Amino acid sequence: MSDTALGGWLEQLLGAKPKDIALYDRALTHGSQAAANYERLEFLGDRVLGLIIAEWLFELFGDEPEGQLSKRLNALVTGPVCATVARANGVASRLKLGKQARDDGAADSDNVLGDVMEALIGALYLDHGLVAVRSAVRRLWGDRVTMQARAPQHPKSALQEWAAAQNRRPPEYTIVDRSGPHHAPVFTVRVSVGKLAEASATGTSKQEAETAAAAALLAQLAP
Image (tube, rainbow, N blue to C red; front, side, top):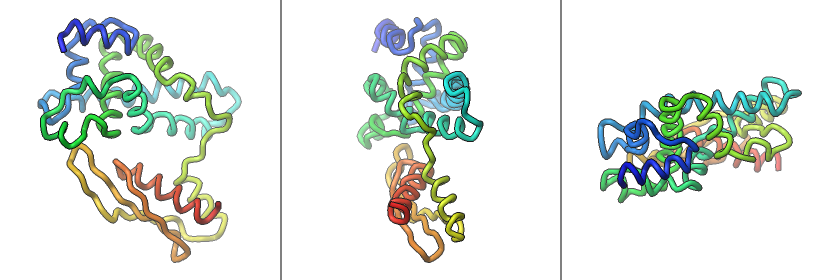
């Protein structure tokens, strides 16, 4: 893709014309393609995204305490949510991947797409500042922020609270398998509450697998 074509797509995606196209090019570059890849920009974009979403929630839910706002925040900045935003806006087709990573399906990996979306946010922040990022994130995340009237309860927190209420031991999480290539791993995690019950689930990250396992066990224990 030429710089002109990339710039036009980025302006449509992010709402600002790129001044330093190299930043965005790097944000779209996977480690399998070049050493100058998206990882540092993803680190920055993750923090910027958290700030923007936290600020937005603070404005929207003026009566909610810190704990409820934290639950909302955690649900909106996950890798899978970032990947969904990226996928819906055609990011996958703009990725720069090495042949093996592309053959392994990295272009549809939640891990990769989520990281790249955060890297693009990091690039936009460096290129245009916080005001531009605020506008882009609010447009891209849209009604995801307000679609739940009540703050969502994270499955791991809910399972922890259930165990405490039943005077049971705290949930224990164990990684039982890790497969797939480095850029698109698949984790299998088992969670148990003492000897009462257990459940297993898979995910593209340890955190995602733990969350899915907790949800599965909750469905057994508190349907």
